[in-house]
Amino acid sequence: MQTLQLNDYERGYLTAYYDTVVFPDLDAGNDDDWVGVQIGNRMFDMNVWVDDMTGNVVCTVYECYWMDGNWQTNTRQKGWVISDEER
Image (cartoon, rainbow, N blue to C red; front, side, top):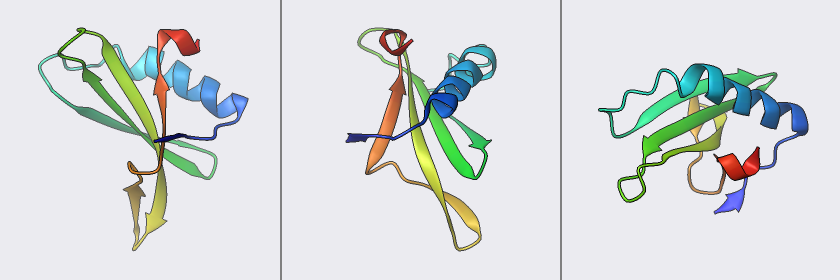
């Protein structure tokens, strides 16, 4: 998968949103949480889960596209993983 292209503002906003909204509200009993966030005219879905092998929380951000009256998440082409190494 290619890396999703984000400007500095989008990267910072998504990271802050993850830190303050998504991670604190993570349902540890749920295998897979999805949270949508819109920044300007772009819509993103954040997929958050706990890696069974490492126990680490993983968050991958995907861009959404407006199609047929709904936002559609594009999980096949590009994504960006929020990790401690990225901060």
